[in-house]
Length: 150
Image: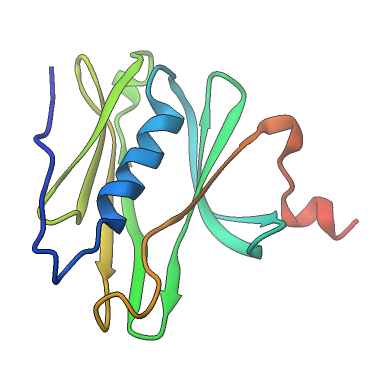
């Protein structure tokens, strides 16, 4: 079983945003299986409008969208992901991070199912916003740009 001890950063470097983001993602994916992962999907929601996101579709009919943020000198971005297709049949048991929240691990009993490479900075400490915008919606309620433009 693959587990990752919780990371702790200096309070001058992170105000708790990154651990909170990990917890939010874990709440959405633990207990489910990944069906697909797509990068640069145009999504729309009532709070942030239309934007690009990496979308994880789960076996329970939910889509988890991770949208990058960029607020002056603060940001969070998903640079790359690696899906392990040989493990997608396993139920997700947790989400952990390594390397100062730059590597995120969505794991099951047999190891990582999905790895995320994340770039981020709090910028001018805590004046600007950072952390992923994470939204969860049912596949039936999902709105993608092509549907909006019709």
